[in-house]
Amino acid sequence: MRIACIQPEVFQERDKCYFEVEEILKKLIKEFDNCDIVCLPERWVNLTNGKELNLQIERGNNYNFIKNLAKEYGISIISGAIWERRENSIKPRITSYYFDKDGEEIGRQDKIHLYSYERQNFEPGKELVLFPFNKIYFAILICFDMAFFETPRVVAEYGADVLFSPTQIRAEGIQNWEIYLKARALENRIPVVACNTYGSLLKRKFPGQSKIISFVKDYISPSMLRVVEGPIDSSGFVYDEINLAFPKKLRKLRFKEIIDKNSLKVRKIKM
Image: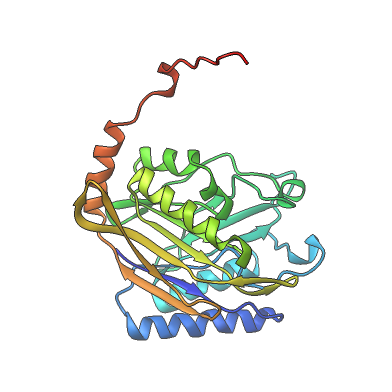
C-alpha cells in the first residue's frame, strides 16, 4: 500500500490553507504518481478564539474542498478532522471523512476520545468504522483515540490492516505521542500512519514530524519497526510503500497470545 501524509502549514486565511494543501498534493503526485491514499492532519485550517467561528455546517466548505481535490487529482484522501454541526447531534462532532479517488464519500469516523476542552464542546463518537480499500480494511483514529489501547485493539481484532491517525500534537507532546504510536503498532502488530499539524495555533507550536510506522519484513521475534518521518518545523509530505501481508501474519501470531483478562484473579495484599 502506497501511503502519504500531507503536512501543510496552517495560515490565518482559509483560502491560503486550501492553496497550501493543493500545492503540496501536486508536489507529491509529481514525485509519486502511484500513491494510493493521502492523509491530512487533524487541523489544517486556522483555529480562532471562539468555538462557533471554527464550526462548519455538515459537509460544508472544508468537506467540499477535500472532496473536489480527491476527484480532480484522482487520489483517495482522508480529510483530517472537521468540526461540524449536525441536525441529529446535541453538540457538534469532530469527524474525519474518507473519499475515494473519484471524490465519492465512502464514510466518516467521529472522534471518540475527546481531549481537554473538547469534552465540554463536542459530542463523542460511539462507533468505530472499518473502511474498505481494494482487498483490505483500514481504520481512522483521530489524535487522542491513539492514546488508549482499546480503540486500536478493537479495530485490529475486527480486521483493520492499517491505522490512520490525523493528529494535532504540539511540540511539548511529541515525545509521548511517539511512544503511543509505537506502542499501538507493536501491541497490535499493525502499521500506523500519523499525520501531524504544522504551524502556530492560538500561540501554540505544532512541529509536524508526521510518521509512517510499519514493520521490517521477516523479523518476527522481536519484531522490528520501520519509521519514516515527515519534515520537522516545516511543511511538506512523507511517503512510503508498506507491506500489509507480513504484519497480518505477525498480528495473527500476537492475537493467539492474548490472555482473557476476565479469566485472571487479582489479589490485593492488605497494608
